Amino acid sequence: WLERSVVQYGLLQIASRKPERWTFNAVVLHDGRVIGTQDIVAKEFATSRSFSTGSWLGREFQGKGFGREMRAAIPHLGFAGVGAKEADSEAFIDDQASLGVSRSLGYDPNGMTQGPDVGSGQPTCRSVLPGSSGPASATPKSNWKGWSRA
Image (cartoon, rainbow, N blue to C red; front, side, top):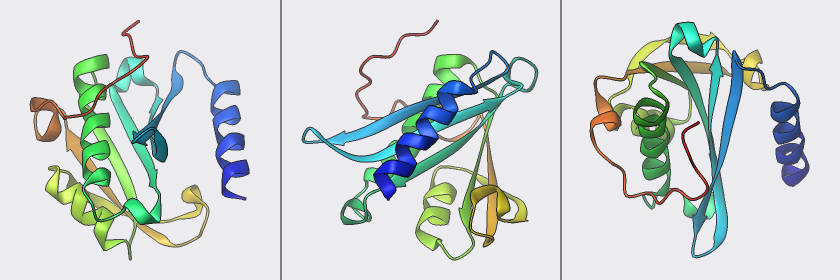
């Protein structure tokens, strides 16, 4: 089920890509194996210079620093790579590990939502990261392959 939904999501993002609305989907590799995904979703980027992030990390790799590294790499790419000014993220209200990573990266709380946007109906906590703080100033240890700034 998970594999099918990931492929469907990717195809939907490709089909709906426009200059004003685009998604960059990255996979996270460890020892040659895909262990997670991380993406940037930009809407009205030319005027807003902001993007949202989303991620998934295999359960067996959680709590080992991979999530923090991948969630630091994507804002760095957004700020240093494409010139964004702000990033935002959401996590389910009961996902204290994800919310803790957001806080550790410099994200500030930015309200709550009743999660139909993320599919479950669970409340989510929104966070925002200004480009002048957080991982934008530090280069993550990540190794980018296949990336070039257009």
